[in-house]
Length: 421
Image 1 (cartoon, one colour):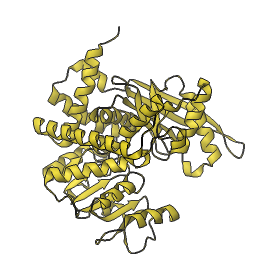
Image 2 (spheres, helix red, strand yellow):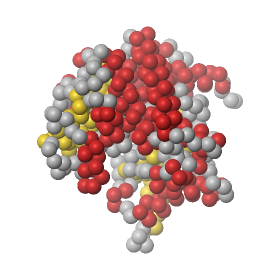
Image 3 (spheres, one colour):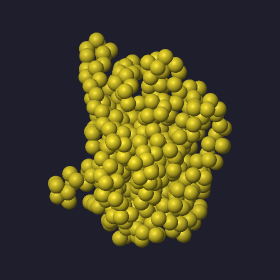
Image 4 (cartoon, one colour):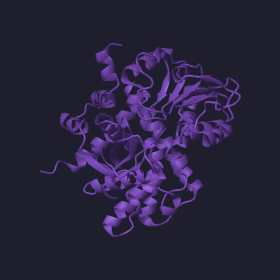
């Protein structure tokens, strides 16, 4: 892979556009509609001054991108990371548009991020950063306009600060401004587990689709947070064997299977898998190439690419992360006969339950966890069926099938609404 190819392949926004281009071609999409869908509707870059604990001032850069509001308010998380960049946020916002359309919830796509290293910030500094960022977004956010959520390195506490800041400016408690909040502040039961459970449901449907056993399959998971860790636990509860799981430092591997409750308890105590007993230590690149039935990349973007895709030995890939596979890798995996459940379907359990949270906040009535999971499972199963039917109809991969479903639904709304002039 030469440097020019590497640069293109590592740009998530260009990767998203390649899939959009293919779907648009298959759908014979109107050029004007394509022009609308290929660009974000609105972008905001903000400077965020924060007084640090030592009384010095630092200025952080934050972003909020709204890709589309054709189907409803923009919806999407906020991430805090030192390598956040605008093209990443643009891609994530577009993926949210497609993801919401695939599961047919009435949201558009948005995403936000702040360039910072949250591990180097105190709790007070994180709170001041969050509140000032929220205040900077007041002109474009709201329960009917743009509804943020947690993402990488943000959590329910960050969402509580966000909600409180917005509410103070509105002079009324506005629980529906964000999702992923604590249950006691209007959060939904089951939200923390939702993305991981959605990944497990997608894996179950994929195994059935390709004719693999419903139990006893070997599973490798990259990532051990709410998506990877909880997804692995749900898959183990379904009767599958988790042979490897990783954190940012490396992976724990045991061909006989790992005890996921023990893994998660160890992580909660030690914050790393490095000394997990009864497992071999391997690096993350080796993890992706382990022989297995199911591979779940649930970490960050661009983990499966043209340089390593041919070494993937999994029969099924279920994308827990956003954008873990590049477009060039897609072609290689398809030629190898690997069935990929794309991110905009596989990890849509999270946004589905975020939608439920938004609905519950707006009507002031909250559901039990079993109700949340039952509703989510029905939506995920219906979405999987729609995606595989579209893939069969267009003689394409499941990823392009998912894009055709999503793009057609968003384009329909744009057509019906027309262009205001």
